[in-house]
Image 1 (spheres, rainbow, N blue to C red):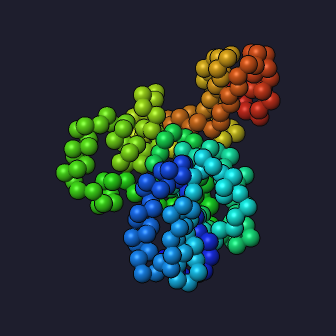
Image 2: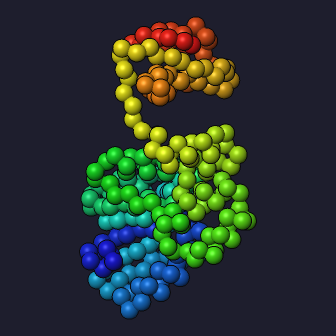
Image 3: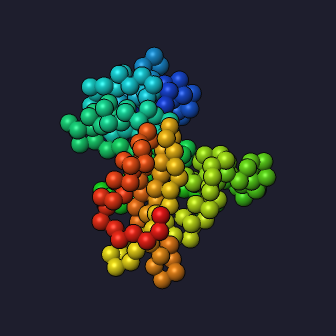
Amino acid sequence: MKALQKKGNYAYISPYRSQAKAIVWDYLKHYCGITAKQTNESELTVELVNGSKIRLFGADNADAIRGLGFDGCYMDEYGDFKPSVFGSVIRPTLSSTLGWAVFGGTPKGKNQFWEIKRNAETDPDWYLLVLPASKSGLLAESELQAAQKQLSKDQYQQEYECSFEASLIGAYYGDELRQAQDDGRICKVDWQEALPVHSAWDLGYKDDTAVWFYQVVKGEIHVIDYYAVSGASIEDIVAVIKSKPYKYGKH
């Protein structure tokens, strides 16, 4: 629709070019219909009657995108992209045209797709749409029930209910984090200067030493800070802990 409204160059980008061709190419030709002036099978490009061009790309060959100017692009399964592709290749292609971008996909851990979603939740310039299968109405209830029987709880929550907490199969505390999210308990809490700050440690050397900072406020545990580092000595970590402005209780 955007390509018909404004003449320009538009891109659909999948993790792999072969994936873009297999999933989208036939649909693109079909739905362009009589608005298509010509199609180029080798370049996976459709030119519309108003001069707009829609082209399919794969993030696996990002150099094929470099230097092109797009009025808009749709990035599908963005969580499967190499993290550097958007910032170093795709984003610059939108600057000269003040183009738009859509990030789509399925949760697969707290990767760059999760970071984009988190940014969209707080930035008024962004639009966020989350479509869990239980609320979208796109799939029959009988199909959802069948999927729940055949998949693990984590698999179903990830693929059908847009859960980032369940996305790593077998992740520790996946159910608990998902419940906390559903209950509205994952939110911003402020440091109360008058109250002591306690810390909880998970010691490591080759893997991270992780330190959580929390306060007990009216019977609630408020996690206010976090620090993690690998390869550091206890003395180095203690120095970081002491540099914080907190009045400590228990470690």
